[in-house]
Every structure is written in C-alpha cells, then in structure tokens.
Image (cartoon, rainbow, N blue to C red; front, side, top):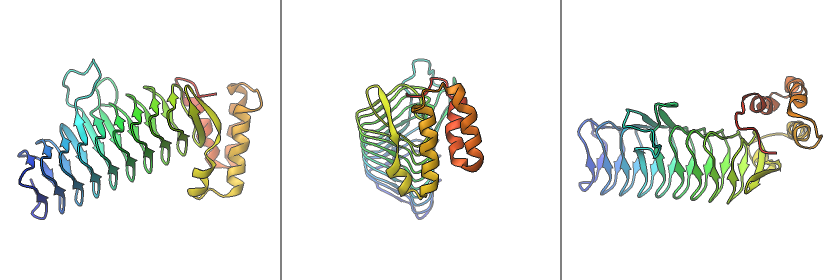
Length: 262
C-alpha cells in the first residue's frame, strides 16, 4: 500500500505489498521489496536497496547505495524469516549496510532513533544500536554487537562480535575492540585500551561537574587502584546509591561475557 502523498520516482521499483507512508520520497533506481514498511516523511534517495522483513520509521534520510535488510553474512543463516527494524530520524549515509538478524540470536537487527551512520558503515546481523549514536565512516559492528545510547564508534574501527560499547562511550578511529567498553569510557588503539572518560561527550550531553567527578572516581576504582573487579563491584554499587549514573559501570561488570577493556 502506497500512501497517496508518497512520491515514487518512475524509475524506482516498489513491489506490490510494500507499505509506503505519507510524504515518503523514493528516488530513481531504488528497489523496495514487498515485505518492507516505510514510515511517513522518510526520504529514500537513488540506488537504495531495501529488502526482507524490514520496518523503517519516520523522518529518516537514506542516501544512495545504502542496503538495508539484505541477507546476513553468517554461514549458519539458511534463509529464515528475520528482521531489520530502524527507528525514527536516522541519517543513513552512502553505502551503509544493515543486515537482517539470525534465528540463533535475536532474529532481528535494530537501529534506534536519531543516529548518524556514516559512509560505508557496516551493521551486521543481530546488532543493537541505541539512540543518538555516531557510527563513523567504514566502521564495522560485528554480529551480535550492542552499542549504547550516545556512544560513538569512529572511522575505520571494528567491534568484535558479541562485544558491547556502553552508553556515552567513545571509540577513537582505527581501533580494534575485542572486549566490552564500559559506559562513559574513551577507548583507542589496536587492541583498544581505556584512556579515561569521554569528557567531551559527557559535557555536551548535559552532565554536570559533580556527576562527572563521581564518574571519574568510579573510573579510578576500576582502572587505577589495582583492585580486582570483584573488589570494585560493591564499591560501585554503594556509589550508585548517590549517583545513579554510576550504575552503568556496575551493570557492565555484572553482565560482561568477554570482559572489559583494561
């Protein structure tokens, strides 16, 4: 079903059954399959491919050569029905790839709201990208990766499958991440190492000085005191009673499967 206000270029191919919302624009030579749903106000430029059971929300901008909902590159994938879900107000730049999930995990790949996915970023199967993130040019999120809200993964960086990049964390360019990065942490290198807190990101996002000082103290407990993580956990839990934002450190220490960068 194509809404009467949608503008579909005559050179685009939109298969029967696709749901195209109000005020959507679709550029020339774009291909949209029958099981795709596009929310109102989304702009899809030329030469875009959107396939599979893909749902895209409102007011997104999708640039040329992006491929969304294509079969993933997991050798276990056998054509099962899995999904891609994209939220609202995302900017998806040229040649970005977002692959559908696998039944071995979540069966869906999810991109939240207000994200910037830069040129040639690769979002692999079963990835969860939060809100307000920045994924740089040629960055790679391997399968099953999670990226928290307001996090940044800069150009040419690669995140190993099953790793988590915590909320407000920042991965510098050309980094290789093979373990989890706690929330708020600035990481860089191959393999990525911690370099303090992402102070610029925290200030830009409204964290006040007392809260930043509390996060710095929590960071020092993890990285500067020489204590084991088991020794640090109760300290952070006590700190989180006064500063709830510190709880993100505690949660990472409790849930990490690959360990955290140190």
